[in-house]
Image (tube, rainbow, N blue to C red; front, side):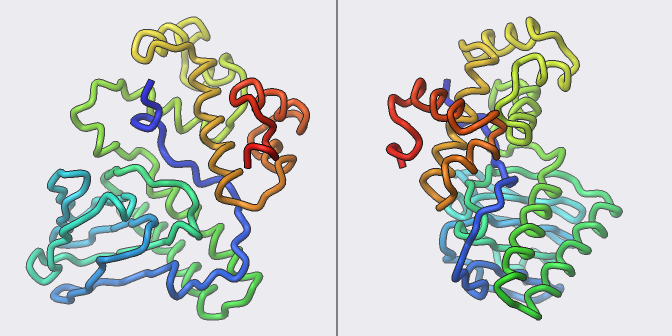
Length: 268
């Protein structure tokens, strides 16, 4: 199974980023009508766009993307090219860039419509983030991290995977993956109940569309998360075990070695 095609981002991990320079890793741009901003090139990271008026147009993953007022667009910076000039498209809204040091996971290309209430709520997140930046300290960097993760996750909710427009992957896989990204290492019945089906039904759906069982699907997802945390953070394996909902480090270590042939500490 090509899990890279199906699995979305997970933004729940609180990763320490000592010595982070927010000036280069976080940009929040309020764009008024007629204004232009040169966004590209940017270092690897996450791009979020909230459109209040006009259009935001770019090319992403080889496709022409256009969102209009009342829509949100999220993508990995590496997937985006050829952003149209705002003065030509009449774009008005908010553009947020977060470097990969601040948000460690790769953002899937997605879009959705945002309601007026959600627009107001996202504005609250942004104002809170900016208030912390204005009084920056080592402690406030961690607050900014948490608020930014919450904002991006909030913008993701109910989104459509733009790179799966032509895909035959059923929508329930997206819901399943989002649940795994939140609860991680739980048994199949736990996710089946949240999806409103039996364990057998979930297994049948997974095998029908991916060729592997629901349990294997969960393991592959959690394994990607474990490897990502081991590579990109300095968190102790015992802490990662807790974050991924293993009962203890020994259980996590045995599970990880069964899937990779190595212990977490050695694999890092």
